[in-house]
Image (cartoon, rainbow over all chains, first blue to last red; front, side, top):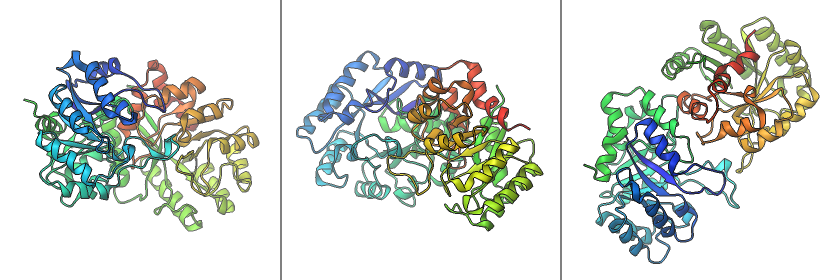
Length: 251
Length: 250
């Protein structure tokens, strides 16, 4: 299995687990590899400080982790940071937090970043929902990325592989009907009594990715969601690893 | 595997296959029994008498059809106290239901509810009280843990559990800790790591219940909050089913 949505770092509003716990959870549940991003990078002024720290922390585990570079197009020098993440750290994806980093997903600046990532062959991930707004403890509530904004973003970049992280049940439906060919989403926050079963009725199986949103969510939640979902073997395999391997260029 | 009892589940319709879908999902998740309530076929904040009649008749129908799998709660409102008293007798004292569900048509400590709570204590059945403390702002009459404490002070013999562990569970656990007959379910909300451990630090393992809040949530995801917790296995058994059965079994 490949976890397409794991994170490492402190979270400002409650204690969370770290690298040892992540490795233990992955080993326990048969997750061989993870696309990992820095939680520090969400809250630091310069997200590259978070990327640098994460790259150093996971350097001994190159067979287990791939870096997802958290970048913001409204911070000078992001081009150099992206180049460094790709060339020096082997980053396999770019991750955007437009709500936390205060920029517009549809702005020309974001477009430059998307273009550069695409030139490097990297999928562009957008963290649409990180934490429940009802449980936030910020001075200002940080809302999720509106699904219609995400739909416009997906439509604006039809040749770019885009992954929406943290979408809730019902929200992938709002990205377009049918789901645009470049649109993908992870299952970390996709929950309903028949979640994956209904998803398979609505979307091609090559668009869903196993993701845990570790350490904010317990690891078992999405392992069990996938294991106990009423799916065919082919569907489960695609979500668990096949789709991630294709998007991340893993042999 | 311990006996697993979900203390917090919903249906809207009794006869369109919905209960069977719940049972199918429960079977795949390993859930043995489900405590079921209806907030009406249309979830309106302030149900009228007709909506309450429909909701409670629907629950009774489903529970009577599957008595080994479902246990029912009676839905009440402060706007319909005489009807509520009648329903407590019809569906609990002389019917198949085992407890009461309260949502957002009144605060938990609304004095208009006193006659209903008097009767609930007489019947010795528990109350599932919706609770949340939302950073985004609560609904008009949406109870917090404090409302439950105020109610408990007026009805010390009451057994009440807070749905969603009050939403802001880090604080709700502290608020209700001194009141042994106030418990909390972990239903709804994202599978945030650490919720069960946090509740147990303040309340002890006999006061936390597993619940899912299906169909908007899933059995397996909500159960993972318990199964992933760093606690002894016998505590997990208590939370997964033993605790709610202690209150709700006749």
